[in-house]
Image 1 (tube, rainbow, N blue to C red):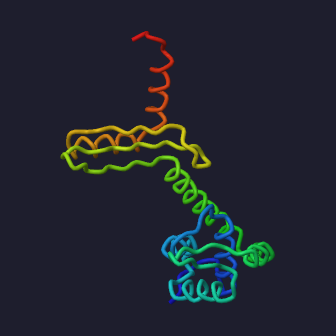
Image 2: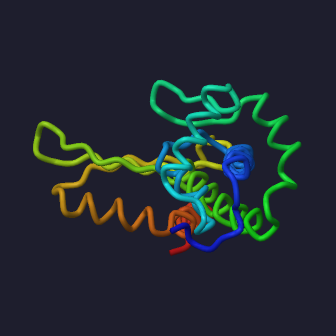
Image 3: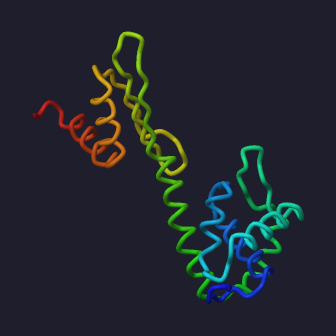
Length: 178
């Protein structure tokens, strides 16, 4: 038995998928599209899958070789024309979910780090902090004697790169004052 919700037809599911896809800042995998679209309890997995496949077949959405979904020009035009067909409360909930997902994507572009084990048994830790456009604000590469310290450094950086950035800039601009 279908759950209570506002979405009543497959067309409304298609409209919702297009609405969501237009607002994403980057292509997403199937699972993310599913999570964002199933924001209304009346939508079931099989209907969602069928609608998503239909939109790819009709070239409203594109699916890359990496299985990432993105909206096409045709999808944008049709999505804008049908957005009002989606119940208001569903649109608002979808908008909140998309904004949260986009924030995660932006954060992942801004804060990047990696740990590599070197041949001599030490670890190389690279910490990168980028602006909103992916351009580097700063990049630090450190040699660390063991994996546990390398992992700790990486985690602390990812938790608060802005503070580290400000601490470093303050230290560098302090002009010899301790």
